[in-house]
Length: 97
Image (cartoon, rainbow, N blue to C red; front, top):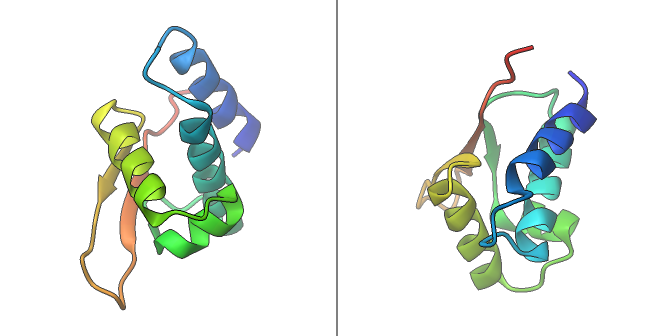
């Protein structure tokens, strides 16, 4: 699957969404990069520090706020694990090409 298609779809979707900031874009792009590294599995199982490193975020509060907002806005589905040894699940909408 071409990751640029997913990123293009995201940019098209957020074009008129005033709630989305550059931080949301960075977190989404980092999640997409992580997903690509994992062979485009869906869902991906992640720890916040993994995505924060890719997105160049230093605040876990900012990361969690962005992920929760992206989920509530419908761009991803976020299922926190609340378990230090098991990453949270993040689902991406499947493309219908």
